[in-house]
Structure formats: C-alpha cells, structure tokens
Length: 320
Image (tube, rainbow, N blue to C red; front, side, top):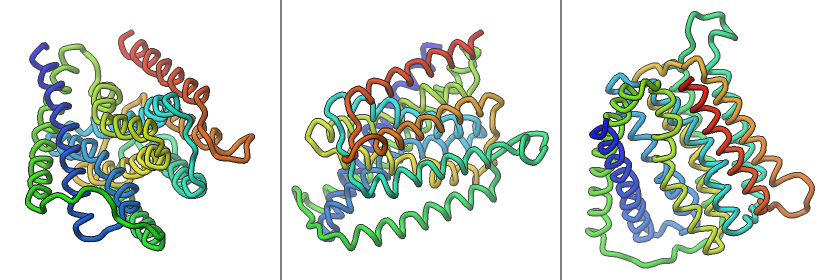
C-alpha cells in the first residue's frame, strides 16, 4: 500500500513538472515563430495544463483501466471550477472578460449537458450498461477540432504582439522532450499507483480517478490560475480553467474512448449533477446582478465550501 502511494505521488510530481517544462518549451518556440502572446496564453496554457489528464487517460485506456478515465475528466472539471477558481478568486476577485462570458463559459455548459446525455445509455436507450463509445469519442474529437479552429481564427484577429524572454531554440526543444518524457513516466506511475491503492483500500477506480488523480492532474491549472490571479491577470486564470475543461471533455475523453469504450460507473450521475451545478454556478456568478463580470471573494468561498462538502460526502458514500 505504501509503495502504491509513493508511486502515485512520484507519478503526479512528474506529471506536473513535465507539463510545466512542456509549456515553457512550447511557449518559447511559439514566440520564436512570431505567434502572439495572447494566442499562447489562451491556447497553449489551457492545452498544456490539460496534458496530465490526457496522458493519464490514454495510459489508463491502453492498460484496460478505462474506469479511471471518466472519473479523471469529471473530477478534474469539478476541481477546476470549485477548487481552482475558488482559490484564485480568494486571492483576488476575478474580473472576467466578456468573451469568456459569451463564448467559453456557455460552451462549457453545453459540453457538460452533452456529456451527461452520452453517459446515460441505460436511461435514454434502455441499454444494459452505459458507456462512452468510440463513435461518441470521435464526435468529441471533431468538436475539439472545430472549437480550436474557431478559437484560433478569433484570436488571430486580435491585435496582440508576442512578448517575453526569447530562449535558444535548442533549449526550448530540450524542454519539450524532457516534458514529454516526464508526462509519459508520470502517467504510467500514476495509473499503476492509483489502481494498486484502490485495490488496497477497497475503493473503486472511479473514485480514485475522481479525487486523487483528478486533483493531482489539476495541479498545473491550480498553480497557473493562482499565480495569474496574484499577478492581476484574471483572463489567464479563467481562460485556463474554461479552456482546460473544454479540452478535458472533447480531446481527453474523446481520445480515451476512441482507444477503448469508457464504462460509466453507477454513481456517475451524482458526479455529473455536481459538475452541472458547478458549471451553472460559474455561469450565474459572472452574469447575475451586476454590470461588470466579476467573481468576488465571497463567491470563491462558496465554491470552496461546495467542493469540500462534495469530497467529504463522496468519500463517506463510497466507504460506507
């Protein structure tokens, strides 16, 4: 049990550091190629911080532990909204760009509803079991491609200039290679440790994916959003979370289910309900009762309290 826990911890450490190096390398190369900093922040940052989820899910699917995949995506998205935005808005109230309110947040809400529909074959189609099928995975990947196309097309129309330190291209490539190796090793060790720990504790792989792996793979988002809020860059903080959630559902879960159909555990609708409420809270917090779009500190506190209650109740439900 101790060995599994250490393997899980080391794996998560490699995932976080690997994603960090990969983002640094990709950003440096992008600047060298003249890609605007604004585009880098809202695409590479969100995509890069979703790489731990992607590598864990692909590895889990290849190793036949697909039940981790759905829990990791749903758990990460819940943590991104309630935990990460909660922490970021406590550090500093987040003023939200109108673009996020009109586009990214509604897209998050729509994708959450889509995921709930895809995962309820038993209720909607009277099937014996519910799965995210390969066909549905292809739909999610196509949605990701379409989203990226329209996002990049929109961002390219913005008047922004690339800034920041330029490092040597070979150093940037080194960051990319080391980051990819770290992600691969971290994903392998995280999945092996999580599965072993689940068996030792008698806890399902779905719950391990929902919390231990989901929070661990959300650490890049947590670090990025917290630092962005502290430095007064709320667009990056919220864009990172909104973009990461979109990538998690479309690219991460889509890729996992194309490799192997992802089974939906019986308790999934409880977690879907929490994700739906979290996404709705995010939508309401920036749209209701004010002229300017802001997530205040008291709303961040509500997010954190809601997440704490969700974790406590879920673990109690699982272990009793």
